[in-house]
Image (cartoon, rainbow, N blue to C red; front, top):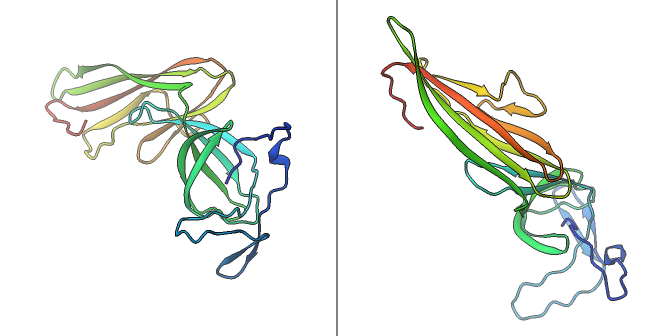
Length: 237
């Protein structure tokens, strides 16, 4: 469990600095055995009982993620490295941020020494809106076959209302053509090869990465064109 907050007792002493009884782990060829360091009472009431195994603090970096085509929300993610001797078992987690419960999430199996990502819930102070500005058709070619170009104009309206700088990743996708006479061209942003700020997968998924200052707004154009012979019908858009 990542310790995402600190707590204090009535005297004001930081409880995160106090010793917490935990467990020791012995790793075998096929299993790990946890030895609880103190006796714990488990009531015979046929209810689930929890016993503290360990409390760990990991250095963490934060990143915001958004897929505005699918969801209006921006999600906060945390990346950490399991620097303990314990394997973090898969299951549901309860996420606390700044001392307050923010979300339930899930965690995959994380062996000792491995990096992992976990979601920390929605942050309403960061917004990404995808707006369709328009769609227009252009025809080229005077004689013989004519080519029709359908231009799709979109824009991402991004706003960081936080008082600190953040890193934001935005995903979208351009259509994929399975016909040799139909071409899809990305016009904005300009793309030649993957860079630190813009990447494209084989499935034509685009990944923008932004470093936003405190209280910064940004408009990001997103335009692609579908070219096809006149009379060709496109389906699936």
